Amino acid sequence: MKKIPLLICFILCLSSCNIKTEKEQAFYTETKTSFFDLRHENWVENTWIRNPENLKIIHESFKKYGYDKLEKLIFTYNNEFLIRDIYIKRNLNHLLDSLELTYKTPKSQTLYYKKFWARRQAENNAPIVFEIIKEINQQRLTNKPISYNQAFVNDTLVDLLKIELDTINLSPKKTTHKFNSLKQYGFHQSAYNLLYERTEYQHLNLNRGKLKASLTEVATPSAAWLTDNSK
Image 1 (cartoon, one colour):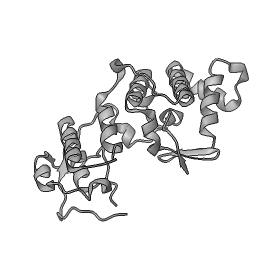
Image 2: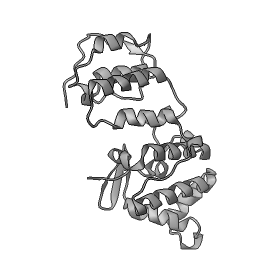
Image 3: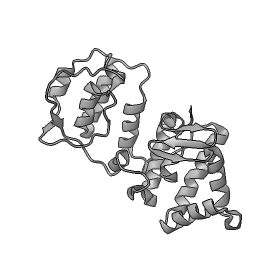
């Protein structure tokens, strides 16, 4: 499958060895942000993302990070595409173009687009969804970054995207900075996972024991934003 930018797939729905040696893993505190459930919930069933204000926040945050850099999250092949566990049997480029064209021309809508926009109208988020589609199509046409409105940006989300997806030219210094950022935001389980459960960092010479000792333990496990990809 060929990679392309993430675009608005969140709306359309919306092996290696492990270096840790401890026999019993401890658990660490993990902040639950307003958008946290997007990480683990079924996007089709998630209600938070359907709120127009939340869609605006996600879109402006994605624009600040860069839609082009989110290409790792979606795969396309001919007339179908896949993101996470969501499969859509349509050409993504054609779908985005058609969604923009049919928003203000109900008479030209086929059944698929009628149903799509009817659902958006029922959720009271059709205007923001159209705005997002229009801006993304503009970015695809010009191949230039889209300007963002900082007032709607969630900088925590932007930083989490940087921590997870910016993995070129990693070094102990950069990785320690990522670790400290996660800890500062309260994502201690994610910080632990960065040290011990992420393949992209396992070759680095880090003082893992000292860093781990600075994390806050809890009695019971909870889901982490930065998940284990080492198994």
